[in-house]
Image 1 (cartoon, rainbow, N blue to C red):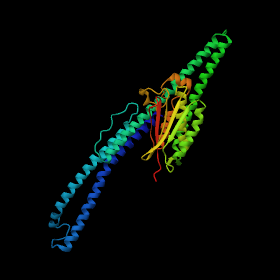
Image 2 (image 1 turned 45 degrees about the vertical axis):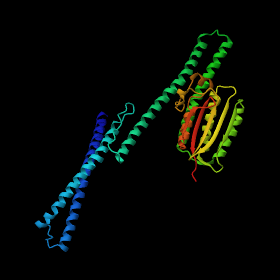
Image 3 (image 1 turned 180 degrees about the vertical axis):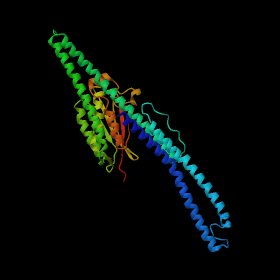
Image 4 (image 1 turned 180 degrees about the horizontal axis):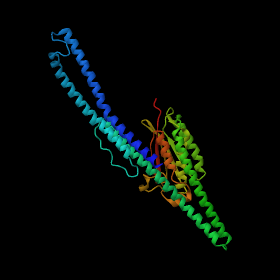
Length: 370
């Protein structure tokens, strides 16, 4: 097995060296063939010209004919040498360096960015390669953050469950009311863990669904009004008030997946209910168009979010207050999900401190251009 493995590694390294040799040999051979064909064409052409219009002998071995060809030959040689040098230093060498970089790419310990060699297509290729490395590193970081967040969020309730279970097992003479309290706490923590796992599974499924998402034209004003009516009734059940208005024209159409956009509104209103933090909560929903986009804003007069946390709200598993998260539910995936859906539609979403005192969320969706 060891011999086979070593042979395989040797075979791979041999193939890499062979490919490099091919790359180094192909271009000079190509230009040599081109040069021979070019010179043969010039020779045949001049022979024809001399034979038709010149008293000079058209024999290929005639000294006068050869003397006339020498300057042309020298100029052609010079041009082809310059061309070969240009191809080598401006195309072959950058591609070789890029291939070498691909073999050494490291997500955990990133290499310094590739230095731009030019502002042409090769420079663009280097830019795209640098951006690709950044995206890979960001994806790796998000994966590590996601694993750490899940482990952290599961560890806290699991520790509580283990603690209460040990108390019930060790202290046999506990009063019934105290035992019941512990059972209820275990049940609450177990339910929270189940919700956390369900939310995570739903988030993954949603990401997969986005990749096969289909869109169709939807009237902007009708979409706004349907959402407003739905959540006006829902918020009234909590004694909250929804105030809404829009400035969409009747013929304005959005190219969206209505189910996915409905989930965005659902997540945003759910956050308002969970984290508004006021008994007499008011929610303000506004819609308008500007340029090629339709804009939707959802604001509230609740307790809001500290300014230092606003830029982090759309990160996966980010929560402003862990204790409030456990009490009210949610694991910090709602706004991350909204961001994914909106960006898949070609829009943008961001948070800000509302003029009403609470949090504001604004997102855009592209309008259908007539």
